[in-house]
Length: 617
Image (cartoon, rainbow, N blue to C red):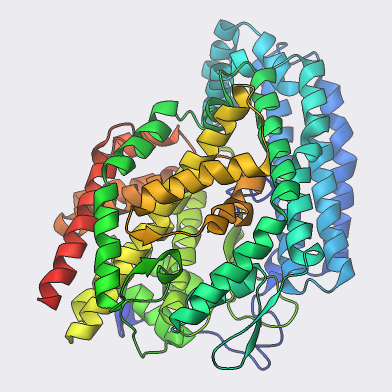
């Protein structure tokens, strides 16, 4: 994934004669392997820069009430805002990466908190700018843009998009109040995060092997993939039983998050929280609702997959606890050097420039790939504009590690291309585009490995992995999206919100999405309390499904087409955030407002099932 915080503004052998060896260093398992000195030489330099940025914030006041005086003065003010934001983004990237290197070091966590606080002060200091711009005659602003080269090159889309948001922008005082209230919206996520990480006494389970496994959130992800069916069932019962015990408390936190979203939507004059969340990047509600509608039409294919999974695992029946173990295993391990080599080979259809960029990036010390004590249990890419991206991973040597490696470097090259072709103000690509490059890398990798497969078992493994990827990244995320839409609609209708109510909503969706033949125990419907995106990124997860749909469409066109198809896709990456995401995709030949991309993905899912059944026959 790409880091979704507003503070992380985006945001085969012999290939081109490039070495395939990854950089190594002594003690790699015990220390971070990336080099953060490209950002700052040391923490002292970071602190000097933080103080410089902090001291610059009062300069905003010198432009207050004057933005309509001239095009040159407006350009000065916007350049100041942009320069401070760019510096602040670099400060935050360094603070976040250092904090995640070792979460046990208090100084690193304090530095990250300082960066958070500075962002909040920055937001408050510039809160007056948008309202003042909106008070200016639009014709005058258009004339300013036409007359000033800086405004035209760097800020034309910003001003255009601001005008679009005019009906939802408050007065100076109102914007200042909302900026001050911003930290309060993080409370539900903070509360639930602390509860799940430290306050809930998660039970331990004795496995059939005699091993003890603590069933916290991380333990649950391990138990659900175990080969012993009895262990999986016991794990689900134990974990969700503990989950259910805190249904009311976590439900109160989620109700608070829902109400916060509704408050913001109403304060900004949106019809509902969904419209407000999608509006930031000019996504119409129809995209969200079309995605859900087309997915529901395709649920018979998902139920067909569950029947195939039951058949291949030779189960007498199938339950929710049977969905995670692989239907075919691959007894193969991948070193970091092999991950790099396979990724480079897989993305060869993207052309020599893409190849050269990813080869150079993966050979540099821009990645911290391996787990170790104290390191944050995360995986993401963060980018500092025209420095370079950094990738944090906690991967093992299995196939999942390989796909994660390819995924995150998709984000990395996306950032490199956007930075190379756009000014800072237009380089940060929106979330709606963010997962396309990463999931397309995964699609190309899966197809490359399937082509290289020599045995029936290998082919079944890669086909089965594709099915599971489509289930998890598409169908499951759409189910999550439908849950969020239903929960918020209930709040907007004035209906009572509680943990029990959320469990009923989620339980109904579980049964509909998984069909009548898959067993789902009542306690499992508290799974909503386990999904962090519901609390920290409302209405975010649908974009995994739209991005995968776009990635499947682009990969099909690239592999069956020629340079024109490849270049249309690369134009999406180079565009960054220079236009609305739907427009960027439409220029590349993809209309995400229509049912077609979602129907095509479901057709790919059906055809993959057909291939597996043909191999089994």
